[in-house]
Image (cartoon, rainbow, N blue to C red; front, side, top):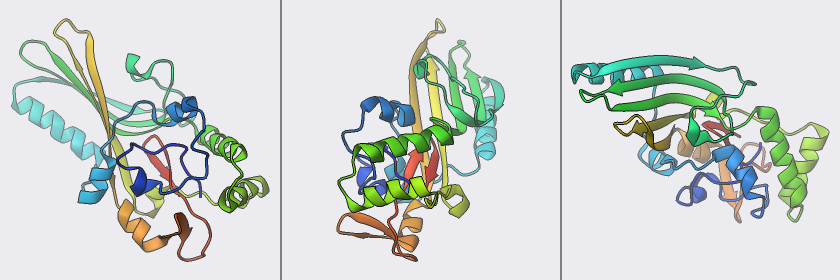
Length: 232
């Protein structure tokens, strides 16, 4: 069970990461590798129980709504290998994403103005790079029993890492980019949608003295994020 170096946003930090293995003084560049400058509404999504649902259904609905409004629609399916980097656009800078899977829907209004939306899942780095980032963070801060136990577990191979998608937590991302009429990009907004997280936390974990534990075993626990992927 591993933790993210940084929270999604200041508003959702207390929900997902009451404490973390890694030091709060970890380099900002490492945080950028995981989350970039994303501005998600994950906390609101978890509070209300809203979910991204089936990404194919959402993409199909967007296409139907655009067609009904008389707009031209283009659809591109993405399924990038987990170890191959993919850059969406200039807003990514030179930092690629990984395991990108979903649908890009581009709509054009009567004036030719376009809106591009990606609905799907992605990782900010490979699983191996993410794991090494956690280890480096733990080496940076060995001031707590949990951090020492976590680093030891990584070293002796007993660290258990589970994709929360396998435990009923659904997560995805909606990335929306709009353009000026001359075709130049105007803005890009990335929003995370998560459902089932609070239910998972309530059923399987408990918080004692600011530290997260697994109810079933009493062991230290943490929830981390790599793009739209959550790891327990």
